[in-house]
Structures are given as C-alpha cells and as structure tokens.
Amino acid sequence: MFHKEDFQAVDIASIAGPVTKMAVTVLEAGQVPGVFQQAFHLMRSGRPGPVLIDLPVDVQLTEIEFDPETYQPLPVCKPAASRPQIEKAFGMLNAAERPLIVAGGGVINADAAELLVEFAELRAKGELPDRSGWAAAAQERKARLQRRTHFDDIPIKPQRVYEEMNKAFGPETRYVSAIGLSQIAGAQHRIPYVHVLVNNSYLGLIRQAQRAFDMDFQVRLEFENINAPELGVYGVDHVRVAEGLGCKAIRVTDPEELGAAFEQAGKLAAEYRVPVVVEAILERVTDIAMSATNDISTLCSVRAAAAGGSAGVAAA
Image 1 (tube, rainbow, N blue to C red):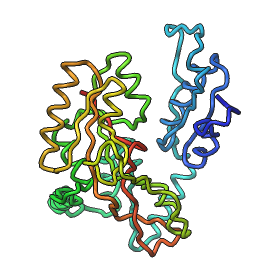
Image 2 (cartoon, one colour):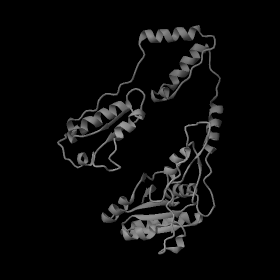
Image 3 (tube, rainbow, N blue to C red):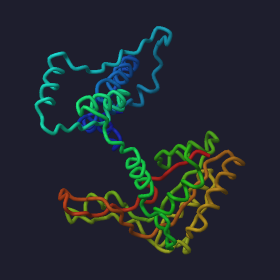
Image 4 (cartoon, helix red, strand yellow):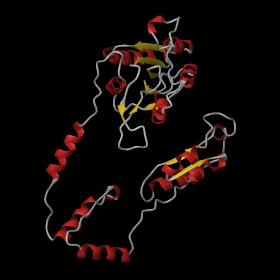
C-alpha cells in the first residue's frame, strides 16, 4: 500500500526503471493481464532483458474477470537488418584489410552460430582454423575456477554454510529470501521447509554502504543475553524465538555439523509439517571481495548477511 509511511512502500518502479526494460506498479487489478502481456512481449523482444512488475497488496487481493481461453500473447519482435544496411556492412567488410567479427549472445539467441561460421569462411575464402579443442580446454579451466568455500574455522565462515547447503539440498532446490513473517505463516499453515539463518549479530550490508563515508554507526547487534549465556555476545536466542513461533530449530557452531543439521532439519520438517530454522553462528565480521566505494581501483569488502536480516530458505 502506498502513502502508509512503511519502509516497504517505496516507489520500486522508479528505482528499478534504469536497469530494466520495463518497471511498473499496477494500481488497478483490471490492468494485471495487460501489464503481464506487455511485460512478456518486451522481455523477449529485441535484446532479451528483465522487467519488473510491482503488485501492491490490495491489487493482489482483488478478484477480476479473466478468460484465459481468449488470451493471446503479443508477438515477439526480432529486429532484422534492411537491405541497405546489409549492403553497407558488406562494403565495410570487403574494404577492410583484416576484418574482425565480434559475435555476442545475439548469435546464440538467434541460433545462428552455424550461419556465422559459414559467413566467416566465405569472407576468409577458406576454412577457419579449428579451435574447438582450445575452446573446450578453456571451458574446462573456467569450470575449475571456483571461489574457496571450504573453511574449517570456528566461528563458521558464511561461505562454508552455503557450500554445505548446496551439498545437502541439491541443484533442484529453490532458494528465497525471507523474514520472520515467513516462519509465523509457515507454522500457522503447517508449511514444511528449512530456513537457514546465518547469524553474525551484525548488520553487514548497512555497514557495507557506510564504510566509504566513514559512517560505521549503530550497525552492531551484539549483546550478552542473560537468558542464554551460551551465546556469548550473539544476543538474540533465535532457537527459542523460532520455537516460540511454533517452529523447530537447530543451532550449529561447528562447520562439520552443518551437513547433519540440514539432514535433521529436513526430517523434522517432514515429521512435524512446520518450518525448521537452522541457525549457523558465524564469525563476527567476514570480508568477501567486492568493491564498496565509487573508486573502482579500490577493492573493499562486503559484510556477511546480518542475523535475522536475510536468510536462505530451502524447500524441504
């Protein structure tokens, strides 16, 4: 809902406009079919790209008359060069002493790789050198270039959490970001899933944005919880909070126990039909390579996700 002074009621369409092909907030429920029709048309036409559709709560809850039998998608527009444009391009290629063809993703999207090779060989007046072996070797090397994730440190590094999540849940798992409301709704409606909470008791992304401006202010969440001394300075007892919401919860402090915890969480979710929170106690501050300033020559750091602020959720 707009104009309610809520943080989430921001003008997201204006924010996303510069980085999308279309960004729109639907204010009338009856406009939803047409907006989606236009969105799918734009995202697939020309150079494919993202669109953003913002649906306020009142629009989501409104029923409209819609007959899917009469719905027709808009045709996808694929740009094609005119005859004069083609002739000019050929003239430039023929006049060049050492022409260079830079082929991008459009060739792949148009399924024109074989035609491109045929054209290049015609221009070269012979077969091009076979570089498929080099390409295969380069792809193999690229596949091995992975960021290090296997850390045995205690407290746990977040990279290790995500590594164990990938092992435990597999490539078909869907991940979403969530807040505390998801646990409440999940318990209310008996929806089983595994909720992974990475707890460093620190507002990571807020501090990330402030570092370049020397504004490291009020981003620490640590305190000594007199009811949970075993937590040290990690403050909120998320296990008890989750249990108070009607969920199951597991706390992990050793990276070697993550895999077993995820397996147990899946079993608990299946048995009790409720969300299961797996809290991983992270090291207090974790740096990963990413620029945090407007100076692209300087590599700064991004802080780990804050406890309770963002979490990975894996479907059980």
